[in-house]
Amino acid sequence: MLPHSQQGHGPITFVLMHFLGGSHRTWGPTLPFLDREHTCVALNTPGFGDANAVQGYSVAEMADQVDATLVGLNLERCILVGHSMTGKVAVALAARRPSYLEGLVLVAPSPPGPQPMSDADRDHQRAYSATRIEAEKFVDESSFHRLPDALREVAIADAQAVNLEAWRAWVDHGSREDWSARIGSLPYPALLICGADDAQVPAAEEQQHTTLSHFPDSVLLTLPGAGHLMPLQTPLALADPMLAFARRIASA
Image 1: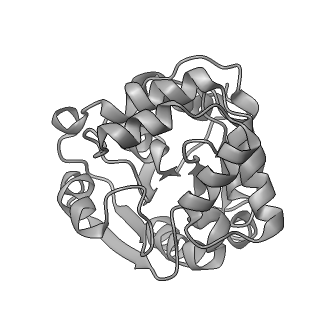
Image 2: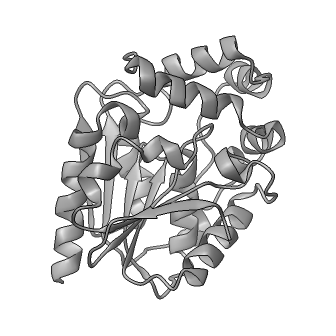
């Protein structure tokens, strides 16, 4: 079972997954806006956060471990929330149509196909060695607008705590995997949220044609003033549409 935090209560369980270099702590600022209405389970995926020593870095292996954790927790009526890297994991898991799944929230997700990235950018990301200076630069570039100092320190600590084998496995393999032909059309409602100032993943128009092409029942939103790290940077603006989405599912 993957290390995780669990809090709150309600008819729906938000299963919260983090970006490359994050952890369950990524969701700390957003959780208080979600857990008054719904259960929240925030996971650490293999190689990151409290799962630093856990192996299994391919998209399928990450989906296997998320699935086993949710089954082990006896969860029902789940909304998978994938942020960046784990957006791809969430969609791959949804393609298995697990009995507990009722919808997806995709926050600045990596697309189901290979993530667009220049060779130079991929080489730069591969060379990351988790020094303080590198972690600061990574967090600041990802957030675009500087995070409050305390939250910035949380993100920097997470970025320094990564298992570099897992990091490089995503850069060289996971981000290149093409799941688009295996996913097909999925019956779940999906909410995809982009940051207006996010330069890390494809923008809204491209997400509409790639990720959301697999979800006939979908909504696309763009948050103004938001970079890539929305759970840390714009927690209330992110939580509001997530709660509206969950209320729709809970009442169905």
